[in-house]
Length: 376
Ligand SMILES: *Cc1c(COP(=O)(O)O)cnc(C)c1O
Image (cartoon, rainbow, N blue to C red; front, side, top):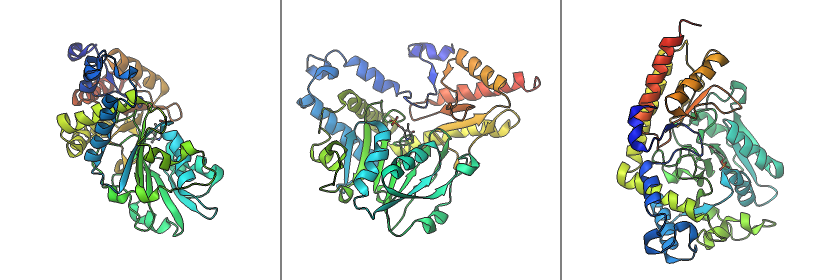
């Protein structure tokens, strides 16, 4: 165990891709007010979602998100369930209303591929760009994409950060004629966004914004249709918007944690510009190490498309990969194994990963290289 971890309740540095680590101040506040929530005489887990104590939490979480991403009244902020995965269905069900409506998909990795498959099951879709042949290691140019969008598309769908492959659009996509729908599950609240560029942006909370159980959907109000044919009412954005995200019992604890994470971002970090700067510095430490030691560490993503959230790389053999994971684990650097579909190493360094955690991983990568580079 690294000595500096001792003061933090023996916590490790957790590189899990999701559910991921949470900011310590948010966990500590939840712990502190667990047994008697703000004078309720019961925990937040035990009170009605209609109580004023919970409504205050819901309002505060919504305001926190609005403030962080600069959402004006043109946008609805919804707290939904079913994970990002349900959005793969809700987006086409809500936005492709008539038989002639179709959607464009930009397929840059596992998640946008799954989203496209789900939409294509029941709707007219077109893949306008796919990175599959290159193993999802690079991303299209924004200018090239403009000419690929079909003029009759109801929306263009993309994933800002492919969590499994570790590729991330450095710039937000912007299509003047067609609304863009962005799955930002793994980089929401990690950097400032310009909402004018989106028809809708959404994220499950368990990567960067809170814990599993709630998905944040920010959608332009004019895209929420009053009626939808043959749509199960639960899948209709309109009902959730009209019911203030309480169409049924909402995931109260998960929303509470989103609020605490927003408060941490606003008050401790000082907003998303600052968060982005910190995230850039953290990622740079790891990518510089990969670039300096290319005979041990081979980065998956093309350098121009590297993710600031999920740093993916491979070692020369499975034996070295296993040894790397084992020794890292012994030093309190946990959950570094890559996704089972791609292997190798994935270091997820979301907002909550402290600078010291990344420094500890960088130092470990350096010493692992020194100890093993001759033995190959
Ligand atoms: C994790 C993730 C998902 C799936 O989220 P669930 O909440 O498990 O449904 C979808 N898209 C991206 C980009 C993700 O990182």
